Length: 219
Image (cartoon, rainbow, N blue to C red; front, side, top):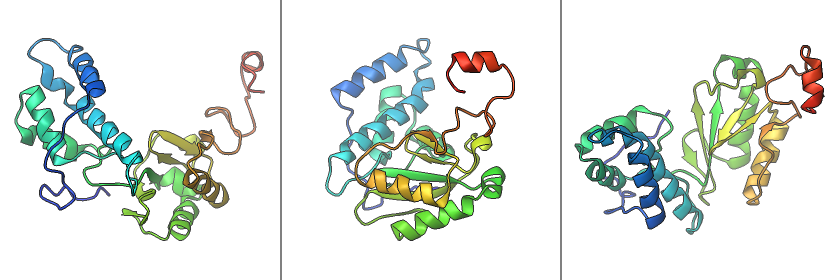
């Protein structure tokens, strides 16, 4: 469940401007669309705003993660020459946009049927117990936010979580705890399967196209 979008919450900054580096990216994105169709760039511009805020938050004290302030949405509306409410409509529809402050490490836990059948309840419990927070809450130091999400499309490697842009799969309560420890030390965990599975092949290894698998060095 997403946090509520509050236009006038205390955490909303009064203004927002893209940095020069992001202004260049914006020009490149808008150039992908035909003249007069710049409003089609609203989704990538929202993503750029969220990433810029995340980069700024990583250097702040306390730290925080990427989210999209109302002022950023208003600024995007000006850039794309569209009503601000149209930007709000897009941002509130898609779950990948965070419209309220989140932790530096946004832990999105999939609890849909395949993950649930493979033990996502244990992953959820580990996150809550280890971090001392509930769903849609952030640790006091700003490091972690946890939330429940629908299917993330890695069902073969269930249970799994998405942390910021990365997938961590084939989890157990123990490996989830290890991930939290590693991230808490500002280190980068191994992305993907946490038990050595290559991509989404069978847990027992490849069963067909064995010669190709040997050439790819996955067996």
